[in-house]
Length: 322
Image (cartoon, rainbow, N blue to C red):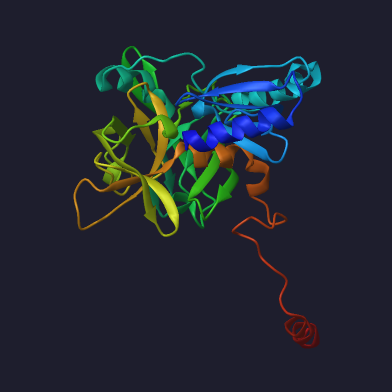
């Protein structure tokens, strides 16, 4: 891969004028081209004969040339707006967060993890901003509109349970098994929330832990390691973990030791032990960044609860009977 990037850099250097941007990569490679846009997860670079999407995780440094679009204020403003829009809705650690013990993190994160109840069962979830927006699995609320959320407020060193019954479905993606809800009780104070991390930075063997309500046993903490980052199940890639996942954990967070959400727990293999799975946080970020496309509305063609008009013949028969 490094050789290919170095070759790209050489060709781009010949094809582009002086003043182009230089992107230093891991593995002593570099790309020289014109930066068209800088996104939270990647940088878009024109290398003369094609356009590359360079992942942020592979970039060490960026040197902007005098003639590049990156040095123009209009592009910088657009990039800042994109980043801040995401940051306002969900939060990430901008600085280098330090690893802590699970014991310390559980007390810090306790108020951000919730229990989601419906007439058909229960699951887990987690709050992503102080306005009461929260994430759970689609299958936890599938077919349900009567939803309540139990939040655990910390008072006097103890967690006190508070149930909120005014909960709205904001968006859902059936195929990624994700749902975005919002607590709309008028008397609700600003909520404590958890931060989203980066599953790409996870290493196999790294320690992670889950908080949820398996089998209704609320506030249960299970710890394990990342078994693999790319387990394919039903055409999707999941994080596989030895942290115990059981019914009721669905929709809850999988944390790294920095206290960041790296996955959304959603299933396990019933006839095995230590075989739990979580949706990578990158899929969650994509869902949140494009939440308008998954809005819960019968007018939205992406909505899984979309009811189409009956065939014309059926309508004619109905009108005749009436």
